[in-house]
Length: 413
Image (cartoon, rainbow, N blue to C red):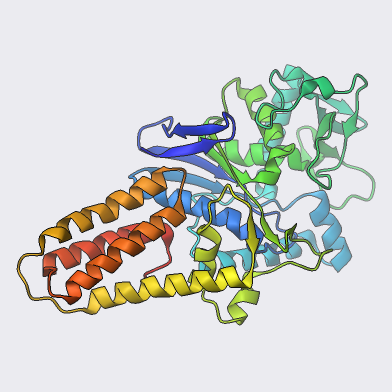
């Protein structure tokens, strides 16, 4: 049985979806005002592995991977470059699609953008205003977290710290991993000179970042989903804001399971332009690494553990993956003529699937699964070289390896 570490409960839980054999999953996509780096792709890749493994288990996965294309930072970047917001975000989106294709990230069921869900954001805001969770102030609309029982429950926020005097935070996002103890903005009302706005039922303006994920999720997956995923940074403000918005509107639990991936560090630090330590997939491709090498390196360490990027680690991952691919190639091309396999073969073939599932069921232990597959295929290849594996068992082994690799996407083309 698949067990996932649920950030909400701080423990591993047996996965039970709302509906049998159907999974609704929201995966936080990129803010497309700047190109994602390999740290971002580490998050997208663990989400992709989860998607693939759920399908392997027989679930029909409905997944949203959203694009944030309307926010303060994107507008500022477009002005800085002297281009339009649409031109900027379209260029970054195209680069993401190319990187995702190379890294073999599965296309989501839905790929909405903030700019395509204005109607749903407005609908949510109207309900929040009617219910008293939100209010107008100076042409903008803010959410009062004190009106929502259990605010900050995902992070575990100590509400005793909440200030007595009302404070408002108008920016879409704030630098660093800290809590803004006060009311957060839902709607940026139009101001003279604004060039990014929409005419809506609540007036001219644009939705704030704080409501955009809620709008994109509920428009495509409704108000109750199975899994919400993202990076660990989202534990500060963002995911609790989404919970507060969606659950205040619906009165129901938004997501049953919350997954958060840890950072990929460089030299012990987060990647940033100011540090000059950002690494893109292109940088590694130019150094001779294949997309599969990069993918394997980014998924082989557990998604909930911090990972420090090093050339040594990447090289070790390349060597290990190439070794497995060589073993699989030898197994595939070794001729066999016997009608019945050695007694040990059937057990090894069964253990190939069982060991893979045992590790993957343990909160997506990709490294453990890979190591188990490596060891079992190595033994089977030796036995086949000795003429102890039948043709039928050989074909069964290859079939099971391909099923496993539909999840991992690192062995077969």
